[in-house]
Every structure is written in C-alpha cells, then in structure tokens.
Length: 283
Image (cartoon, rainbow, N blue to C red; front, side, top):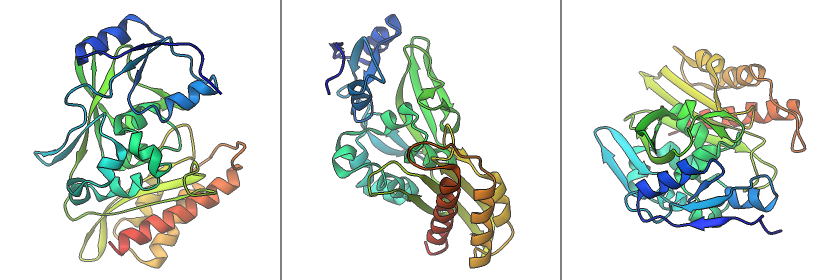
C-alpha cells in the first residue's frame, strides 16, 4: 500500500526545520521513518509535508557529560545498541533496544523518533521512565526540557508543541545499580503484549531503591509504584521477586484489543516483571 500524497523538504539547518514545522500544523518531522511511514501507508497518518531532519548536523552524537549520557535524537538505534559507551553507562538502554522490532528496523530507526512516536508498547519509553531520562525539545521559542516520563500523554500523542523537534535525549548514569528488561510477545519482533524495565539498587544485599515501568498495559508506558514498594528493604530473593510480580499484575487495568485480552496482558506483565527482576538479581 502506498501513502497519500505529501510534500518533502530537507532543510539544511535546525532553524529551517523548526520554521517549516511551525508554519504548517500538518507537517511532520522525518528521521528514521520506521513508525511514521507504515502509519502513512495504512492512512493512519496524513502529513502534508515530511520535513527530513535525519541529516541535520549534531543530532546523531553519543557522549558522556557530567554524569549524564547524552544521545542525539537522530542517533540510529542500532548504533546506540552497539555503542561501548552506552553499554558502560546505561546497560538498560542496550537491553531495551534489543527488543525493538528487528535488526533492519533498528538500523534505520532513531532514539528520538521512537520516543516522539509515543507507542504504548515502546520499549524505549519504559526504559526512559525508570531512568529519569529527559528530552530536549527545540521549537520556535527555543529549547525546553521535558521529563521523558511526561512526554507521552496518550497513545501516539506527546507534550510536544507545534514546531518542536526532539533534538537530544539525556540519560542519567547510576553507577552500581542493577537492571533488567523483559517483554512477552507472540513472536520475536512483534509488539509486546506486556513488558517491564527494572532498575534496582542494593546495599548489603537489601533493596534500597527499586524502579519498575511497564509497557503495553495502558495508553502510555507507566511506573509500577505498588510493585516497587514490595521490593524495598528486602533481599532481592525468589520470594520478593514473585511478590512484586504478582503485585504488578494486580495493580493494572490493561486494555483489550486484537492482540490480547486484559487477563492475558496481566499474566504477561507478571512474567515480564519476574524475568526483569531475575536479571537484576544476577547482574
């Protein structure tokens, strides 16, 4: 299936891209296109103009800066997945990326594009929520910081204003923390029925900090505070992991669609929580 007609622009500067998007509310930025183009093919998106930002200078860098991993919005997912710096500073991000679509999709898809797409089953949104990541949005009024957990406001809808582009993502580095990521899908590369990103800190074998975020269980990726509290001040044992997994499943009211009913998503969330925490225990 082919997309509806559209205009195409490839600005040479970020300022030109912002101006094009600000002038036309139906224009959309194009980076990797791995989510937007299929939606256009199915007539779920009908942009008047695609503003190609993939080659704008400075949007693909990966660097460490004052305790934060800084990743340009146009950095390819596969490049980030294979980066030794990312593996050292943010192993959860690498673990999450390994579940994103297929190798071919990650080769073209971008970090900023995935977050801006705001898919409820997006792995990067869950990872960003537990890591307290931020996105830097650049628009007609300049730059602003948006907590990644507040970026998605509904399925495929974000807090970005007209003309704003995600230009940078910032991921705090937490030395000594343990992490895990797991999701349940019908086939490798399919959208997740449910998944969990986990970050845990231990002191003398006891959990002092626990952060869990689920995906595929609502309109956006969301934290699981009830399950987090179950883990605190206890060893990360088989018993506490199972209790947290059960609590996570009981705390959500997931949607029912053609992929799974609510009970199936709860069961998948329970299994994914258990697996993510087991990974954390053995990290």
